[in-house]
Amino acid sequence: MIDLPSPAMSWPTQLWGRVISEQEPLGWELSLILALVVLVVTWSPPGHRLVRHLVTLVHEAGHAVVAALVGRRLQGVRLHADTSGLTVSRGRPDGPGMIATLLAGYPAPALAGLVGALLLGAGHAAGVLWALVLISALMLLLVRNLYGLWVVLALGGAVGALSWWASGPVLSAAAQLVVWALLLSAPRAVVELQRQRRRTRGSDSDADQLARLTGIPAAVWVGLFWLVCAAALAAAAWQLLEGVPRPWG
Image (cartoon, rainbow, N blue to C red; front, side, top):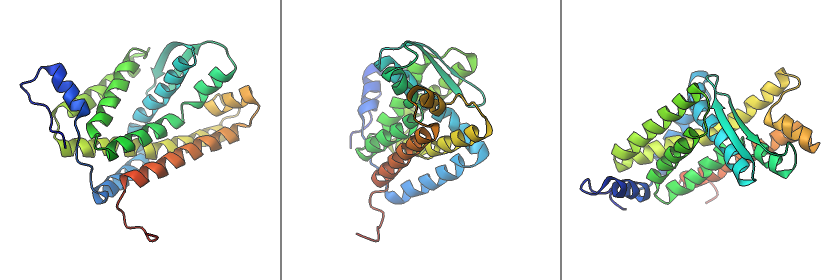
């Protein structure tokens, strides 16, 4: 295990040392307890409303990253108090680039959670948290409303402070909480999407926009979102709960 850098080092050296430092992975028992705690929080109305800000941030970051990769011009991101968000980009209103941009949002939190789980398995809990700080910093350049700025600053500042001062075990536990929050909230976001579509005719959701662009029913896209989220959760749980007694092995 790599120790955290010495305070005698310059702060850029300390920062890089903390980003690449390694922490001992948590045992499966503690990982399971943290997963159950996050499950209760994310599927309760008040807890979900709080965690949903993180999920929305990563959702919109997914839209923004893919939009930039396919050559669309990013105009900005808005994060709202009702936990909804909007990413605006300029370019062709149809075609593969627009389809990829719309497709990126709902799977983004689940895939980010899966990557985080792999990093945790390699002992890089600090790297998971600093990655979230980096995402917040990049989103800070894109957010175009005051509430969104507050959310990004509060989240990035809190995680950055924790990543700078916390001990190894605390970093591991905090990173697991973040990863489980992304993994367990992502399927709920898809469930809410389907409920919203049932309540509101003529929805302008990602799934409905994809349906208009491709001719494939929105329900199929919702199902695809669900499958990606479920697969990422299963793969990440296998990684994080390694060592759990299994009846077949």
